Image (cartoon, rainbow, N blue to C red; front, top):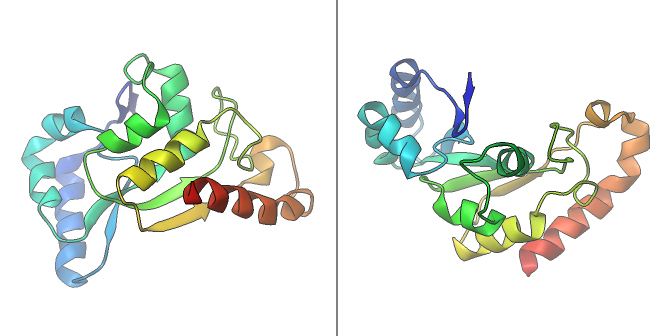
Length: 167
């Protein structure tokens, strides 16, 4: 289920699993995609989420295509820029999925093919000292292409993202 603040999670079920991950694999960095988005999410899930936030290694994966959808579709996120969104997430960011879209659908396009504020997101990531993994997450079938048609643009996508992250 989705709310204006993101996905609605069953934290009573998720929290014990995530705690087991932390206990089983010390030193592993792990988390949930696009969760917790901000302090309001921490408050909403406080009973189960606050203990997880205290664990070494717990963080989140930020999906930049999803960020664009939220910023364009949900009043709660409108008005802020992508850098502010990144600065306000409520957990350490361990991974970023980099893709673009038109703000209406999750198209998983190459960076620069849509209207996502990827430059602002990269600025925000630099500001918070992000040093994790970036994944170029292109799904050709989501935007009417084949893998063969999409493949030549991958190097350009990677170069473009690296340039944005370098500032």
